[in-house]
Length: 387
Ligand SMILES: CC(=O)N[C@@H](CCCNC(N)=O)C(=O)O
Ligand SMILES: [Co+2]
Image 1 (tube, rainbow, N blue to C red):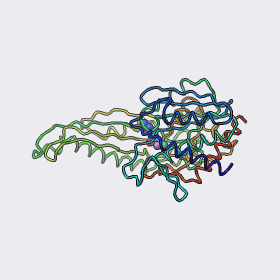
Image 2: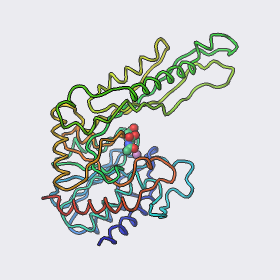
Image 3: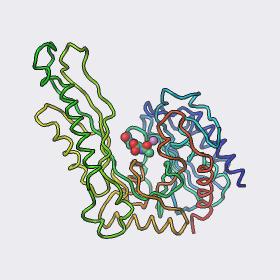
Image 4: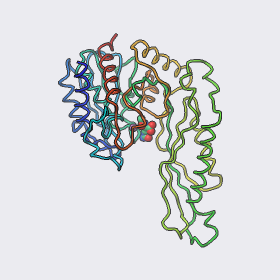
């Protein structure tokens, strides 16, 4: 069965990677493509999976499958980032080389989805699986709506993301913004270009913001309040705001003063940081320059609350990991939808194969060792999940 599990996982991974599910553009629909594959494979699994597909439109689709009365809900997303341009071979054809499975989504997070499918087929115990389609971009409507609608209760939710086969119980939140700097068009021979170019203003803001972020990261920004309560030690190493400008657009020609400049940027507040205050700290660096800020995506941290409620969820998640013998890891900097389950009141654990450093890159891969280790844990959890 050991050999079978990895073999079966890789067969599913080959099929899942072959489905083009980039987000954007998020073109998935219920009943088709990757969802039809998953439904057909679950029909072959022992026991009777009750399967429900919900299509919220705009490529937001979930497939929810349940066998028996499980204690744990597994969640995994099926969308990937768009293929990076510098893949050395077809991104949608799985390659297995040097102990790695390589292909778009292999690490983030179709390797885990494949392992979950294989585990469901090679176990007979109670099992609940939620496959979603809008994690990589959009508003995470699938998980949000699922939490609002479901009548089933679980002791905890296990969200698959690349954690190197460690159970992660805490991570940062996320906020993205766009900013439009306003200037005045004109001939670049005039001296006012230095003050009135929207691009110059945006560049000044970026350089100030990078410096501000560097100071927050390298300076001492320890927790003040709740970390003294105990139980929060796993987040104490997180420093700074993970500021990043991902998009800069604007201007037409070297000799025209740019009338506007557009930026997209983000921050990742730690559990316990005040996200509004962190954001304002960046907004204010624009000084008197004219700029319009707009908020993009907002995700809470994990746990979603830094008070007694969050601590309770964290401790319940940790107790569960101990009971089911999942190795625990440190808090991470990336964001996952576990935060939304936490916000809805469930203890949430992030656990999956692969290293986040491989996610969103060209020739993305998951190590076969990791994949197999995690698949074994999934089988074990499905066998004992009602314990
Ligand atoms: C695991 C991972 O890559 N998570 C993404 C989550 C993106 C959030 N969604 C969004 N619409 O911006 C991250 O950047 O941490
Ligand atoms: Co991702």
